[in-house]
Structures are given as structure tokens and as C-alpha cells.
Length: 285
Image (cartoon, rainbow, N blue to C red):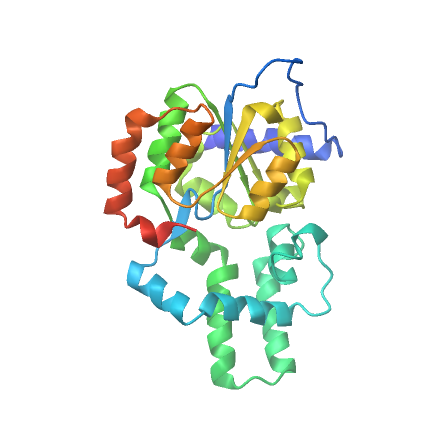
């Protein structure tokens, strides 16, 4: 299993070394309606989610911890040059650079520690920020904290059984991702291709990474459907001719897929049962 996954990455990385070839794949014949043959998945909050109980998630949201952390990281990023400028409107620069291989998680934590010292944060406040940033940037902590969303896995298996080609396109750092591959090898073995920002040195919503995926795997944009939980990533997919779906809930996703001709209604009850069992409101973007 791991040998096959390693092969996928060798092929992918070899493709990136060939240079900036960015055509959009095969062309659809004039007058011919596109039939969707491939589904491209994001990872975070689409296939994987953090292992937080629902009540903890709600408390964190009420305390605006996520927003405060992003504000703090924007502050810590002051003067840092973005590795991929297209990500600058959506991420603190230190996050964008980490996701695109511009710096490691360890380097990010060192940068944050220096920032705290320079700004003379109190010892107590510094410990809080460092602990939060450790959960973001430490590869082992990150990989350990992520769990699969069973309803999405059921959907992936159903699509695979129907003969659809499946791909991953995700903003993910290059250090923790091999840990995710090892931990979830059977899941990743279902995919025909995997592309992450940490290996490509660019990330979503940069349209180049979508074109690179199409080129590398010989895909026709009009035959692909892309699923992401972030609207700006969906819009970027649409900009290169891919049909984009923004995930709001898994029951809605099934309906959206059927609306574009990908029918998985036979699995609908299974998805709904899994969603209810896992508290879908806790997992949606």
C-alpha cells in the first residue's frame, strides 16, 4: 500500500521538476457536452477534521480563538515576504509560507518565539501563543489531531466503485503530510493522484496549481468536479474551467453532485446516518 503511495508521489514530484508546463489538459470536442469523469477533493474539513468534541469547538468559536490566532499570526508575519503572493489575502504570510514549503513548522515556531520576545509579551501570554502555535505547526501534533470524516470516506468509496477518477488537491505542509499518508494509507490508496502545496511550492487559490494538476494527470477541466470548503478556492477552480462545489454539509454535497450528473443517491441514507452519528454541525465549514 505504502509502495503505491510512494509511486504516486515520485510521479508527481518528477512532474514538478519538468518545469512550468501549465496546459489545461485534453480539450472537449466542439458541441459535445462534458461528462464528469473525475472528482478532486480538498483535505482539511472535507476529508479530515480536527478531533475536537462539539462543545469544545463551540467554545473556541465563541471565544474567537481562531480569529485571534490569525490576527496574531498576521502580526508575527510583519515584514515577511510571501512565498506565494496569491495566498496573502487568505492566510497570514507565515501560514502561507509554511503551507508552500517556504519554511518548516520548526522555523515558524522559532520566528514566533522571537516575535514574542521582541514585542515583550508577558511570560503567561507567550506560553499561550506558543502552545496554540505548536498545535498548528508541529507535524506530529497536527497529524495526530486529524481524523477522517466517515461520511466523506463513504462517498469516496462509492465514487471509486462507480469508476470515477479521484484526486487530492490540498494546501498542506510537506513535513506532516507523509505522516498523514502513513496513518491513512488505505484511504489515500483510493486516489489516482495527489497534489499538495508543500511539494508544489504554490497553493490554492493560485490558479497555477489547478492547471498543474490537470496537466500532470492528463485531465480535461470540463470533466472535473472540485470540492472544497473555502469559497475562494472553489472560485479559482471555476476560473480554469473546473466545476467547483463549496462544501456546506455532506447531505447538500450529495445533492450538488447529483445536480451535475454524479449520482450517488443509493448511498444517501448511509451518508445521512453517518452525518447524524458524527454530529455533522460540528464538522461543516
